[in-house]
Length: 191
Image 1 (cartoon, rainbow, N blue to C red):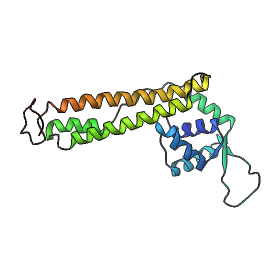
Image 2 (cartoon, one colour):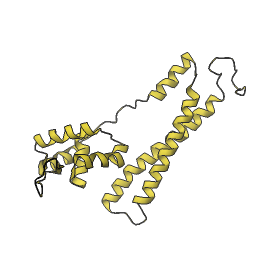
Image 3 (tube, rainbow, N blue to C red):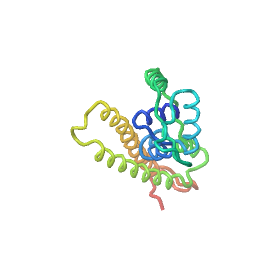
Image 4 (cartoon, rainbow, N blue to C red):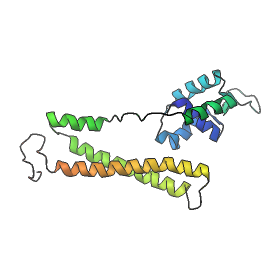
């Protein structure tokens, strides 16, 4: 995925200004493809220069007025091309997993607390996704656009569910590990 394609998607859903796009990224697309305000504005300029989007004419010219953008036919064609192109999955990179691997050689000091913190963060994110699902996808919302958007949300729900289960398993494994100083034997209760 790339930022230009995320922006084209958002603008096809609803023509918007850069500020509105930033807000929409914070509330939806940003859950799986984040971008800063500056990145969005820089990309809007590139997309406009490439003839994929255009600024909508202002109803009344005014200094400091927000420019709203819409997708041009060339932008729709590019998004359709990109959507239909094959892409390989990206290798997963996660610092927490690397830290666990490192703990095998340097000790686990501080890691159990951070695993608990990660668990709480994933539980909160799952609760937020469930609220979005309940609010935005009531029974009967089964048009093609709704189904595809719900599918994206389900990916987030399933990923958070995976992390919650995996973190629970990881924390249960910590009960069988020596403590950070190496003084507790496996199976001994933690102090």
